[in-house]
Length: 376
Image 1 (cartoon, one colour):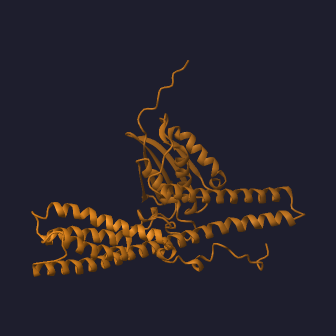
Image 2: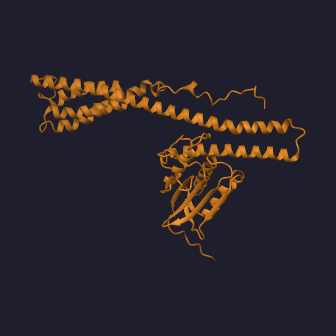
Image 3: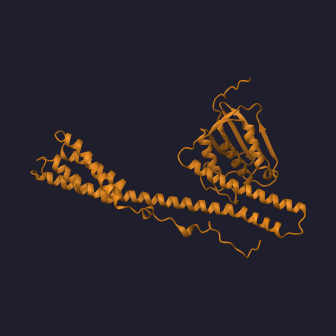
């Protein structure tokens, strides 16, 4: 690979496309604006009904509060224009239907003029404040969206660039290396395979984050064998685990568990990869599974540097990269683990081990008794 031939990274320049306020992207048509004004008119008309029915029992200032609430709602939902129109309509409706003499815009009592004027001014001020609050909320959401997007692009750019560079270098060596022996070619092919698997796991994490980040995920629960799920996860990480002493401690006679098998497999992969990313080669990693009351407990323990004090919960937040280490990562793995566990009604926690290293403990409800399959 020629270091002088630098390729432009499409993901690296995240700041060049900064997210503008959401309102700048919303081009309203005339029909959409008209609908907002009509909705505002409908709300004021609807509020006039109880005011009309209660005009003998309540004073004018009390009924005026109905209209003010409506104006606040209109300002928050549909911006300043419909709110201002609703303010004037409220004053007219209050004068015509509620204030004596009824069904006339003439006002005999000077105090009623003051009440109407105060209500109009208050409605206009409140509508302006509500609109400003709404716009502030829009800008806040836009800023948070931009922050999340930038963090995601930065993380993905970093994590994709590393395996892509390794794959490109290994492939270039295979193409140009005419004198490579079979063993060297095999190592390069294995490197390409391992890095491609790494990219695949990154993409899977991104897909899981999308699936688990919007509302509650729809789990495809089935009765699963935890031994098989553990075996599949260990098989996918076989090459990386080869550099660590590994202990598997499965309680004999583990029952079936009602879970989404693909998600629990991803949970195991993320927790094991987290241990691999933050421990030195040659240090022990242990995976234990046992039954505890009506739950199944999984523990992944390592001999790494442990967790910084006070970060036991923070490391499960999105884009939080590791603990006590400078190794890269998208910062999504543990947040996805938490989402998977919570979706199953379980718990997850992290703590330092007295003998050194970190321990991640997951408890998943077993889900009752599995169905009995009759043998014919």
